[in-house]
Image (cartoon, rainbow, N blue to C red; front, side, top):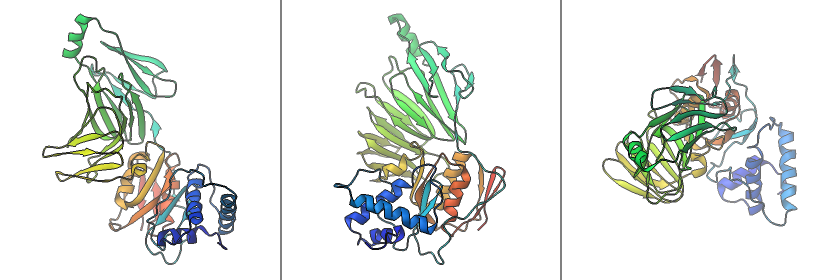
Amino acid sequence: MEKKDIKKVLDKVSAGTATPAEEQTAKYWLHYFSKDNIPVLSEDELNQETEAIYKSLMEQKAPAKVKRLWYPAVAAACLLVVIGGGLFYYNQQISPEPKAAIVANTINDVAPAQNTATLTLANGKKIILSDAPTGLIAEQTNVSIFKTADGKLAYKAKPLKEDEQKTAIENSELNSITTARGQQYQVVLPDGSKIWLNAASTFTFPATFTSLKQRKVELVGEAYFEVAKDKMHPFIVKTDKQEVEVLGTHFNVNSYSDEDATRTTLLEGSVKVSNHNEHKILQPGEESLLAKNNLSVRKADTEGAVAWKNGDFIFNNEDFGSILRQVARWYNVEIVDNGNHKNLHLSGTVSRSKNISVVLKALEVTGKVKFKIDGNRVIVTE
């Protein structure tokens, strides 16, 4: 390959004519530019960096294993954009090609979501977790609640005497954790299950599962679950439209009321997803979609589904309206769109740890949209 230009490499990948070495180069590019603190590069710097990466690949005896951060289905005229730790490409013909960095018109910038939430105890007491000290923050009849040094909430069940177990069953104390827009949090339940809560979500659960036949919890919004295995006590996640039943597995549930469908994505194990009419069994790599009371199963983009939990926005031919809603929830902003982008779909990745201006710049480079930040409002100007 005489010219190591990444756009041409991606063109070949899209057309199915790339060599294995060129495909590996493309993977390295997207992996390299997913890192934080990567500056905007000029065209010359872009070519130099491509040359260096390609040369290092040729010197390797075997392909290195890298995190998959590229998409083979990029259209033939795709555009690679490298901006501040992220990259986007617009999967339609673009003419003329925009510059490599377009600055969003900003009056203020907006920081990413904070690691905080509000814990509501069974007695109605509310605790702002960012204000709570590390260590024991509350006690209930059969559980102690701690805030860990790394900012998680951890429940530890107290040992109960035989005569106390009946009381625990009859007076199961429900707690809830609520993240506002611009917040996220993680909780470890007394059975060892781990839950990551995305922005604008509420998770309701028994303070302890001791002596309960089922580990039943409720979710509004989005959460990622790593459920501790317990064959005798199924773990059930209830949303407003469905239930997900598992014994022990890893999965993601997206049930925002402003999205068109409730989506359950399975990474490990198996789950049963049910609504009022039917149920489906998911296998790893599959996801269910519940829309208009119709439950269907399809192959999942698991990396994209859990990108939020891993600190990224990853979009794979994503509807522009969906992208705006995700950005609005994460940065706690109001986004005003003129509604002329119904057929716009974008692909790419950018770190969620960046300020909102970085995300908007990446979107602007497609040449199809522009933004203006005005306080807590983001306006799509064209």
